[in-house]
Length: 457
Image (cartoon, rainbow, N blue to C red; front, side, top):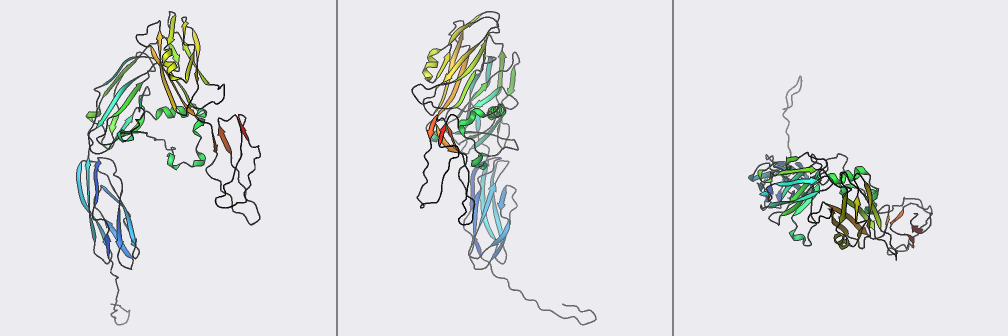
């Protein structure tokens, strides 16, 4: 009805044409299977096919807080598919069943059944408690920490030892057979400036052989990684065998606390509640450091390779003279570590220096623990000195992954600069060759500083 002021009303006829829409789910149902409580399941994908040659408008209806669906609304072009991403998270144990409804403008609504079963993993610690007893200050001790996952679903544990800096968790070397590996230990980074390695520009990546240039803060961050970690357990596999390490920093100040290990998404559990105890004991013999880490070193070549060396400081805080010695056989078995001297006598209050050398033979990691004895008592080592290092072959690398030449007009040369770096070469002449698989390219290489690589550059 069209009303006209100071005139007669007129009926207006309106007519609209709605195109029929016909769509259908490609999948018959969506099943997330069994998943841990509190953890987001792996996202699933759904597909809706537009079966006609006209655009279809859709809107998704879901009243379940556990489900996340994207996109919620939109349009599907003629004869095309729309891909939906569906996520699921439940904070309680439940056998979840529901339907996803998708309304199609001008067509019938589509419904798809969804199922998931959220369960709390059955995890427990084998050891009843972790009692280190008395540990000499300057020494350290490790105790086994064995965790089982008897459930048919994976489990994630969160261990936070940042309030206990004298303790750290250690993941033993993995076996050759990856099928029996049931553990993955990943550091948790809460620094807002942290960047995931997958997001780092390759041009900004530091060469792994230049670890000696790390400052003290970076070294502290590396140690912190073993105190706040997330541990993943595969279902019904062999147990996760960790080691808890205690290095006391003071004397006669007992440590007694509950291991801060929680099940991700759930929190504290009685099966994971274990008491940790330990106390530092006044030392008779001081050694600094007790762990000598050479990090990564290039394997020396030639008839007389020069080994790498670090110094250890030993001192006697006692009122009596002390005779000390190490187990030479354990040192000789390593084949790459040497120590000089291997025995001696320290007067009260005296200090001395011991040199440790490292000469890697292969590009592998080396680790060696050498017992130290006092006053000829070889029944029990007074402390263990740990040597670590890794060998690496000499290498050539570039300061970037690719070189992009700028666009220039014809007959105008395009130029770019990059660096050729090396690690471990004493004297090497570069002989570059440009690949011609795509044809002969008009590219010239110039070396402003010369083509020789060596110790000085």
